[in-house]
Amino acid sequence: MLPTRVYLQFAPHGFTQLRLGQHATHGLFASSAKVERVNTNGVDITCTDWRSDDFLLVAGHRGTESAVGFVEGGGFTQTWSSSEITTGGAYITIAGLGRGGDCTLVGEGYQRAPEISMIRAGRYRPVKSFDLGYAPLAEPISAAEPIAWTAPDGLQIQGWLLRPKEPGPRPLVMYVHGGPIWHWRPMWLGRAGAAVLMLLRRGYAVFFPNPRGSSGRGQDFARRVLGDMGGADSTDDLSGLDYLVAQGIADRGRLGVIGASYGGFMVAWLISHDGRFAAAVSVAPMINYVTQHLLSNIPSFDTLFLEDVYQNPNGEYFQRSPIMHAHKVMTPTLNVVGALDRSAPPEEAVQFHRALLEKGVKSVLLSYPEEGHGVRRLPAAADYAARVVSWFETHLNAKDEA
Image 1 (cartoon, rainbow, N blue to C red):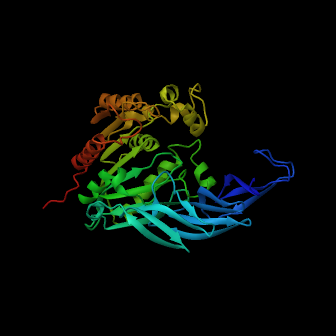
Image 2: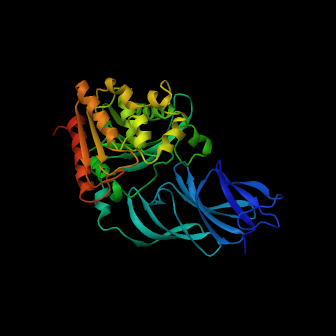
Image 3: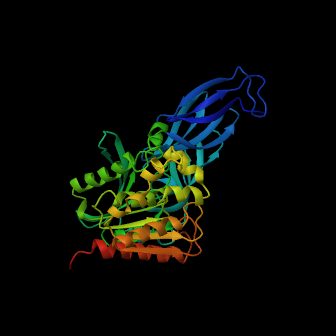
């Protein structure tokens, strides 16, 4: 039997609901189909689970929160939310229990190892923890807190700050996420955050900004990056650093930046337009959007986000390529690639590395022969974390004098 409602298209802070006509079958809708929009109270829905023909369990993100709820009778009811707990994966994922809004999930957070958990009657209850020694590794995290600041154009921007135990101002590393339609949220740092834990142990603060284009703030917020990569999104990041310096959290003279994929592009872009960074690490970046388009296995990415074509010699493919601005870079840069990366081919980082060397800027090219888009497997991941921390230690001089 077909469900009486089909939820088809995500809308700003919700999704569209189609009421099916009498003759709907196999995805073909009668002309009498009625379109409605469900208000999810600001939650961007990323996970759906039909529990019956007319009861839909949902989960998603609202700013810095992860939330669970259900849709029944055309209305949304939230059952649980948290700014400390979420799940692994690109976005929150849950599995329903019955049709009362209860569910199971593998919860985690910055200071919480993955654990099988249940949400019943709106209460989160751990069932089985997979903590095999993470607690002492996370002990250097004095605080993991959501923060918000105002961009130069007045838009509120959000992010996360991990503080070490030492008082500020501290050396700080800004970590730019990939995507750009993605976002930072509480995560178990034992999966891919070894370098972050090592930096915190050495007294660094770590800043995770969610600039415009990030998930969790609705479609309008996400679409603000289209046609403007390296524009207002970059000032969102920089104004976040200004805020942390003004708050006495970050040391203006000891700032570093790291990012992968779109984040790797943003690292190269920022250091070619702003001289505040003492060290940079660019991972799997897009450096030259013409070669990116012609060599990558995802050429539609740059066409979509640049809103241009590479045949335009005065267009975005040239104006938004960090390689065209590399002559302005003064920041020592570690360029990291996976030799098997097809999304951001290693030739991208090679171009930036050679341009920096030609300018006389300190640059190292680090290539992992068995890695793809990012460094994920052991022993490469351990080597990568150690080299990242060493790079920042060398150039930010984070350790206080005894």
